[in-house]
Length: 85
Image 1: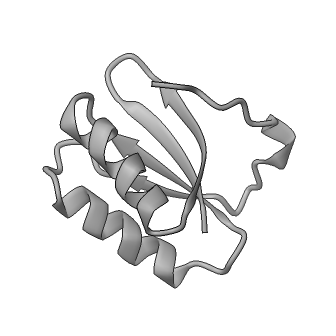
Image 2: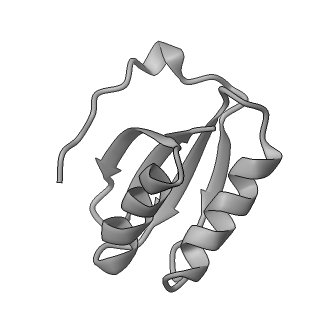
Image 3: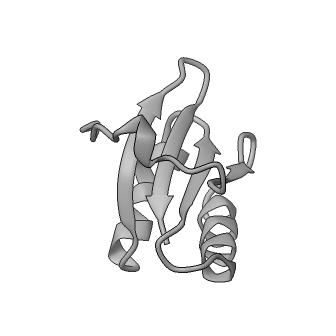
């Protein structure tokens, strides 16, 4: 899995957080997409996902829906996915 570097200065205080640890597929993708649809264009959403199927499937599904994945960061026990609306 590739990791994209994101300039920390581009992270705004208005970045929303969605903790989906323990949420199975495809519910985690659906909840992420619904949250993104409510956000203003150009804003960032940080999504916390479990290892395995969630981090493998959600970024791919979001990309197929036209969202831009800014960064995927391994936090050891979970992954932080930064996606731009």
